[in-house]
Amino acid sequence: MTQLDGVTDLHSHLVPGVDDGARTVEESLEGISRMVEAGVGRIVTTPHFDASLCRDEKRLDTRLAELDEGFEILRAAVLEAHPELELGRGQEVLLDDPFPDLSDPRLRLAGTRFVLVEWPRLSIPPSTPDVIERIRGHGWIPIIAHPERYRDILKDIGVVAAWRRAGACLQMNHGSLVGRYGRGPQAVAMHLLEGG
Image 1 (cartoon, helix red, strand yellow):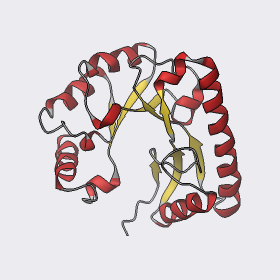
Image 2: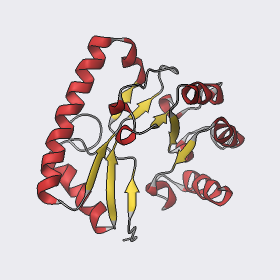
Image 3: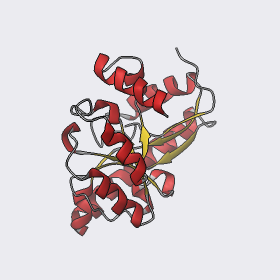
Image 4: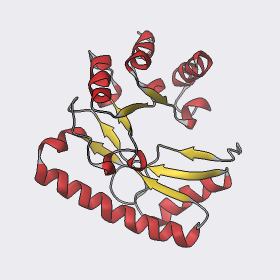
């Protein structure tokens, strides 16, 4: 196992029963235990969140209440099982609406200005640098989740440089770096790391 002393994990699906990640608190704690054993000292867990919910107050409130409840259950379990671990929350915001209202701190990573975002269907839509600039214009700093996994990234890897120029940060998955998603994502991940 790779030792990651002092690492903060900013992308995980550990809130039980709210998305395609951990289904139960027990599954959450199993994943967290593996992360702690590897040296992760802080986790900001990021369940899936559709940006389009920001346009429907009732659906937004319902989803955030569901996430609040799940996070509190997780926090209590982590406090008992791993009191040394710092646990924060955020979301992985699917930009199915390219201009969401991200003013609620629960949508951002540990309430900071940073927000983890992804494009729909692991495809890169047109004008993504414009979307990044608009998010930046509201004071938020987008972090593009797993850019190495987008199917069309190899057709135009230069788009990543455009995202960086527009003010985005990048987050790569450990699974990509070790080849879990195949050679293509691994090669892109290594290329992006080498390019800074």
